[in-house]
Image (cartoon, rainbow, N blue to C red):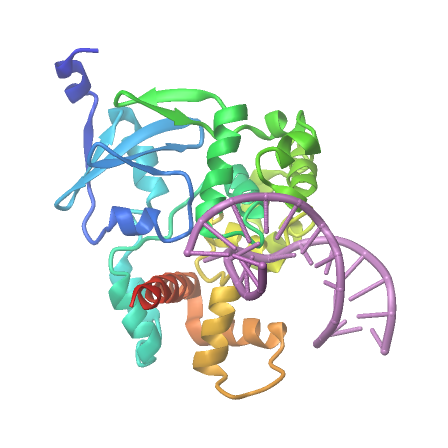
Amino acid sequence: MSATRLASSCAQLAAPDFDLALTLNSGQVFHWRAERGGFVGAIGERAVFVELRRNELQVTPADAAPLVRRYFALDHSLDEIRGSLPLNDTALARAATACAGLRIIRQPLWECTATFITSAMKQVAHIRQISEKLRARYGRTARVAGVEVGIYPAPEAIAALTEIDLRACGLGFRSAKLLATACRFAAGEINETALRGLDRARAEAMLRTLPGVGPKVANCVLLFALGHLEAFPIDVWIERVLRERYFRGRRRVTAARLRAFAQSNFGPYGGYAQQYLFHHARTRCRRDEQD
DNA sequence: CTCCAGGGATGAT
DNA sequence: ATCATCCATGGA
């Protein structure tokens, strides 16, 4: 509890080419909270406080440093990733520049899957709200740096609820899907080790057997939890960007055509390109509204 | 008030 | 295969 003890429980990680706030606010994760000059959140079961000072990431508690390093993907070479993208594409180049330091993080499988099931037809602000409510009502509460943090409820905890409980958290028609998928996880029907051993197409097929997981959510899980950096989730924003930027004036472009184009055009790190385009489109739109 | 949101499942062509 | 419709809820 003493100041010296708090200070000694902090560790430093080298974090060059990293924008913590941008990464946490880019719509890939929904529960981190700005606090005390940094951010508090949970990585699976562990509550963590992180603060970026120059090119160093301060981590509390200290023994969470390896976990934090892996979670924020500080091992990704953004130079290599950026170099692999088609930057002669001015729209992408501009988005990539605006998103310097953004990293595609490695989220725990269950909470990533569950969160994106709840994201269907919801705005980012409301996805955060749902995550908060589920954590507060049905998750364990942990404490770090003098702040309370809600841990995402385990599959078993969600599986024990009713659809009514989930609707009371604002999930609407997503309630039945989350409940059913939680039951699949709780019953041990999703073998994470096996899933991680599959190639992208097979992993996507397995994920899509889960209720509430279609092409978009499956690709979010592939990208944000399973490390398939070529995965390219297509939501309403990205679809708009693709149609306006790459299929100008062409009618009857099917969803399958858009997916095929994205895969062939953006390459092995297409997921980064997708995140750049997504975040850039959203923030530009907000600026437009303020003008 | 209206419009829309990091979609998915289903049933009809 | 592609498309239309419905599914709840809250922010803007």
